[in-house]
Length: 287
Image (tube, rainbow, N blue to C red; front, side, top):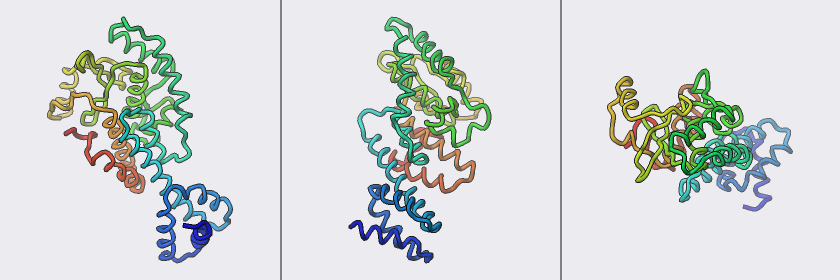
């Protein structure tokens, strides 16, 4: 589409007729995320409230599409860096978010852990090192009040506030450990998200629960949890999962948080991402 035609369509967003708006917005959306800077300039130059409102709606849709494309590329990549994956989820709501800003902060934490690890350390000592720097030196902690506040499921807010819900905080903890060279993987159980420390042949040596600041957990403890929660244990609940499943757990937690708030627009926005993961669920069950 030629620039003059785009400008004409943007001008027509002033038309109060909803049918005209539906047609115009559909044509603009067809142009894809490359239209974002043009729309941003148009928003700044107009004094028409209706036109600004409609430009904002189209911008949000295109920015969400751009973030979804980034997430799709992340899923298709061979190496799944958890911070990058969580960034694309957060960018759905924070379109001006920059990955480099988060990387600068988190990489310093990873470096602190890495330079204090030694090859001859037993696994327990390596975990203590991770816990010391993550919880004590850098002051990360679980949210004290309502853990279902959507704000604290976004990785940028967790990094900035040093607080997060159990899922977002565990994901960041897992990322820091992985970047420091520890053999940590996600374990996605019904209503519980923890990490596994694996030894040779990927055999799980023990589990770590960020809810208790990295406390070691064993299968008997998980069995006790299942018993109390009246959950029938399945073998795959104990198995470590890839980082794509860890990010899916974060996504499903985000949807659940917005469902509790009855924010249907945000629920639908994040549900649109589920097909990228194959429409499976790891939040309530793992098949």
